[in-house]
Length: 559
Image 1 (spheres, rainbow, N blue to C red):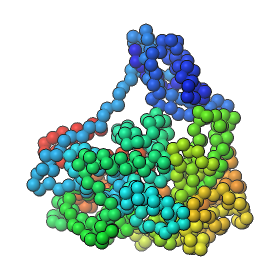
Image 2: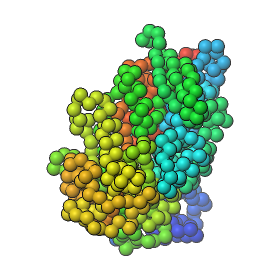
Image 3: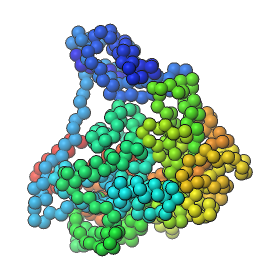
Image 4: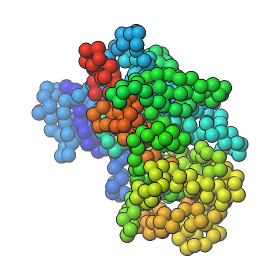
């Protein structure tokens, strides 16, 4: 009988290549059988349990064929092991709405932004036969890689093609994490599509899946091809310059002005479904929407630094004597505290074995982020160390875009402190806490070089005071986190969007402007690659359902 066994504990050696015999012994023991009775075995999910550093092991969900077992009820699993009949995930299907496109008055949906939200939104719309137009202000990922590399190596900043803008979005030059704090019926579909487009197959198994910057460009390019093969159109170097709503309030038709950034030519198109998946750094787009009267609100975000440690130190802190075992991945962490002023301080986008990257998208500003390859084999670990910024931190008269202005001010301050060269200001934790200088910064990985600086001159007082209080407390949570030698590089200001484009919970359209669908991280409804992709699919589902209803069909998305 084929069964699924959850919460199977396995020693580290059992997960080494060639030790299937040891793994079979552990699985057999877990389900109350002998290894000889197992005729097949497949790991469905794998995670590391390092809560006790004296007993670091793997926890698995396994699908296994047990000979001689006729009913799940007859199994005798170990205590804590759950045995059940396997359930295959339901496929995500899309209806054929191509007849809608053939109608004389049909308008194609327009998706703005080719990050994960926009890509998956366009993919779903294309597979439903709606022939979407996907526009991206940046360049194709092949060209974008060249532009990012040029800037990292000391060349000029291209404000339309960089770590923030271009095919794949900001996540293309990151660790490629696919974890999310929310459960979505689309999550499995996203993972399977990534694998089909060239991502490593282990993302279907790992409890904390990640793709890595080395795989992401190929994956993103193949997603584009999937959209085009399904009937969608993708245009690069094309910017949304304006939106206009004509006619009565109940109309859903939007006139958009698109500008070709290569030629300067502009074009007007009409649509009844405009999906805005512009990402958290489309500051000029936010300003355009504000001028158009689109309902937006301030939302909490966070700013701070990138903190770097030696990866082996993080491994030892998390795994104890098991650190270095070849079956173990590079260790990560996720830490948070609240200060005496009730200000949240937390780590975000932790990149094991990675590097700090030059993430500026505006001239005259320094912005940092982190990335790592799939193997996570670099010498350093890095993470954002962020301080909560609240909507009420800014006077009301500064408007809904006050957070955008604040981000820009910090990035410009970092640029000035370093002599306007796009080098980044950095300081050791020891010097930061003591208010001094002189600590070695040789371990810093920011590619354009770091300049030793007092971060109190770059970051506002409420941020530095929160970091000063939080660092020792975080060090008690993770040994060595507040090591005096750890390097902090500023400024990390793009962890999330400082605004939310308000949408109706039922229709997912803007509450103020019909036909406008805010999508993903930039719109304030996601916080990473996976959640953004799932939100893109959710919005596409809403558009598909509306079209299907107009034709008297079932939307049939299977979500």
